[in-house]
Image 1 (cartoon, rainbow, N blue to C red):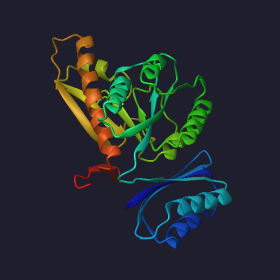
Image 2 (image 1 turned 30 degrees about the vertical axis):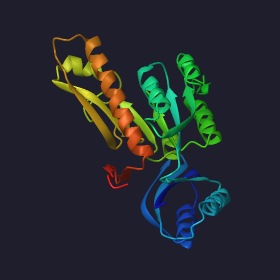
Image 3 (image 1 turned 180 degrees about the vertical axis):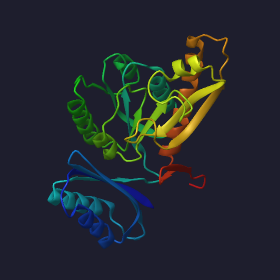
Length: 283
């Protein structure tokens, strides 16, 4: 265990940064990177720490951090990445099934060293696929974003989720949601970002007549489709092909790019430093 990620969220007030950073230093850990923001009176802070203490007690540190957060009226959490521990992955879905199927099949065949405690859907369309793979499916029907995300965050907490995969999840996440899982939400986007962000990416590529298209897996940030890029897959775009044929080729790229990204993450091969993903080949 070399590093960990800390997330602090709650009503803005004085003394938050000093209290949390002092706790980290008092426990003989170093701060490698920190980012913070205030949105509509809510304070967010993400901290990457390095752990140098040989006798470091991760449960004691976690309880202490949560206690400090509680004193401040904040939600404090820590994510440890350990080499021999299987991570708990939650999958968020809407209607499209190809990425979900690829993830579940890869896990079933042992290609992904990961636990999948739950799949959360904003529709019930993909529930049968999860039942087939004996994965619990939870339908969250709330239309209002705050209520929907609060329910999902509670579900993730109850299932001790380490990271989240958006398998063509067609909802924009709020800053609050994203900051709960710093560099731990992986999305797949149907274009070679930064080209064609947002919805209808294949349609945009088709209309522009680009010669190469593909898919991009990236960490989710508060800026839509602007998060650090993890992997990309490309295909030559034949302008004589129909839009449906282009979409089919794109879906194959989406599957490959996302599986590769998740594999790297669960094997602790990824580091996100100042907005850029570094693939560590030595781990």
